Amino acid sequence: MKTFKLFISIRKLELKLRLSNKFDFFIFILSDFFTQLLTFIFIHTLFENIPNLNGWSYEQILLIFGLYQFSYGLFGFLFWPLYDFSYILVSGNLDGILVKPINELLQLYGKGIGDVGGVFIGLVIIIRFINISQISIIRLLLIIIPMTFMNILIFVCLFTIVASLSFWFENISNSLIRIIQSLTIYSKYPLNIFNKFIKIIFAFIIPFGFMGYYPVAILYGKEQLYYICIEVLVCLFLVLFTKFIWKKGIKKYSGVNS
Image 1 (cartoon, rainbow, N blue to C red):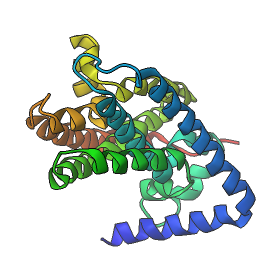
Image 2: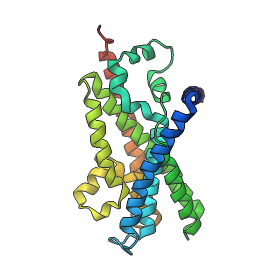
Image 3: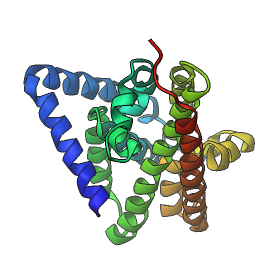
Image 4: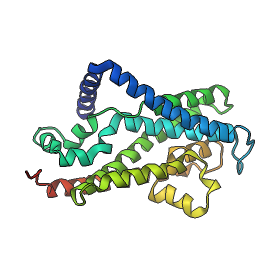
């Protein structure tokens, strides 16, 4: 609880800093919103006139997209600095973080504000689905809320692992982040429209399938409930591995040489 309160305090300070230039912050939010809106329009246009895609209706595909946008949007909003870790490392800003008597990851996670448009678009789609769906709201929330929390945790772990690699390989994180972002396109569509190899990869190796596909598939009985347990195990493994590789990287780091 103490750590959580500290994180909230850091986020409040960061938000005040960004709001010091309200026009710049407004333009940033507006541009991000329209970027996400264009993606939504593309999905809407592509599947609006397709009544069924391998057993998936337009509304179900839209919910997969909405859950992904909401999870990824919250991750981007709360943990944006992971995108810029290479710069933080080579600029010497990490040195300033390490000398403070606060956990370095907590400080790193608390800096910067990212994706806001994705949160809004995803939330609108989810609320719309709740209003038109015949699925019990309690069942819907019991599946969506814990899986969204774990989705954010998966993103945090994956991007922290990628950031940690910069301790050994200079500027590699930027390239790997672009690769990960390109792979997230699979998270916006039902995985069973792809071959089994793709489905296995995005369930156990790069677990992006949990961002949208598995929650919706479980809601509609297309996948078994035990996939929630699988996501818990995946999250546990990623948290332990992330902690291990970050600690190894920090021990290797010796500061920025002039």
